[in-house]
Image (cartoon, rainbow, N blue to C red; front, side, top):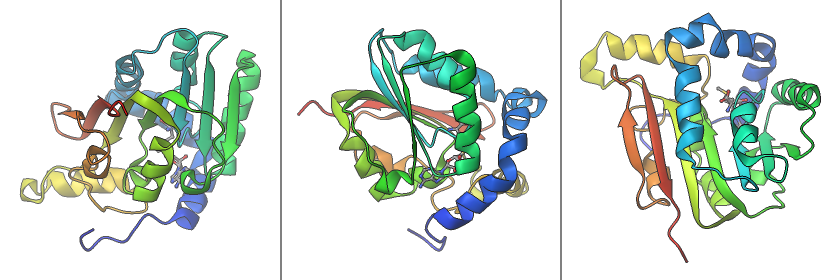
Length: 219
Ligand SMILES: C[S@@+](CC[C@H](N)C(=O)[O-])C[C@H]1O[C@@H](n2cnc3c(N)ncnc32)[C@H](O)[C@@H]1O
């Protein structure tokens, strides 16, 4: 695991207690648009290749910024399960679900590692969840609740390699707001790649975000 500590769930809960009220404004607003988050989020959901009736797990769903794009594809007969550690982030997700009148969304307040997941899903989305990407127990737990050959998509932040100083430092400072560990921060997908044999990873032009997608092996 290198010198960086493991993800810290208590610190994450505390971080997102403070960040929750401004999260959507920052990530989906002007700052997020500047780094292309909204566009890349839509691309991540699109790579899941969802069909009406599909069941999707939004892993670390936060305030539910990906819900509309998922709902548009799965329709009223699909199912969306959002799992989130922070009660403050989840309150906003709950309000979003109420506002849109979605009746096929289940929200679970829990660390992924311990979540009571009552579905076998067709797809899983990991959007901006570096801490979860660096928790092998969390990844194992999700994979155990996916159908064989389920689709997986990841949108995440990363830093540039150390040798790219000072850009490395700038990217690290940007991410520090949202993560509790820098473990694996140059290649955050490596633990998932052990579980998803055909994981394809594409970094954004400046190397500050990545999009990864793949399938579980058919059993
Ligand atoms: C940057 S936010 C991303 C939220 C959402 N996926 C999005 O795309 O906007 C990271 C989220 O991961 C959640 N998180 C971190 N560690 C977690 C864990 N072990 N289990 C569940 N959620 C976790 C945080 O509480 C936070 O809401």
